[in-house]
Image (cartoon, rainbow, N blue to C red; front, side, top):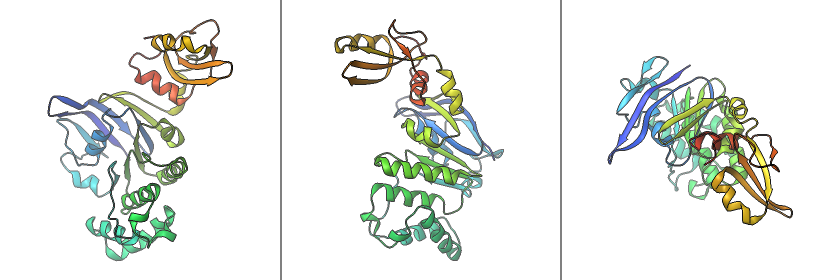
Length: 293
């Protein structure tokens, strides 16, 4: 099972690049596509979901060119877009039956599949409630259920936890991990903790370009020895933030604790820290990893 993106570019009106020469190969597991808002994540997701066509480049699914033969991928694709909406007056069963019919699934098989999926997403007890009464997390679980109706080999979810409370986000991430198995799951997000919790491969994207792709442990290794903590007075903070890439600021009784990402120690009192994925993300997305500004 292999998804290959080769040199994809997308130019929008006004000469705005959504993607520029983007290349990536993905196998089974969960790919965390991580980048700031406006980085080009949703553009890539729409291209992979065969909704949008690029200006140039190639996308292949198991060696099949999906830009020329999109139906070959659509048959095994599940997609939860960022702007997924529901019909508020339908209940979960009615809504999923409607989506199954739209996908051309056999009616009897679809009914059995819907019952299975409602259990998977923990909505069996709420299956006859109108979707308009669902919480944001429950609606997202309905979204995952509709994406899984055809038991897809490729599951794409775009910013799935935006707007969810912490408990719902954890539940959603756990669900994605359980679903990965022998399929490709692409999780597009700007939330580092979502990727950290479940991704087996991470791709960092900024301004429409791939910055790097690596295993989570490889990203952490890339900032080993480059993360520091320095405790200073409040008056020193602005100057240090101008000079160094700062991943967090915490006010405590002994002063302001700055977490700094830099190639060399940012001062005699700086203490080396164990890196996190947030540190690695900032290190790579900053443009010139680890350098002072």
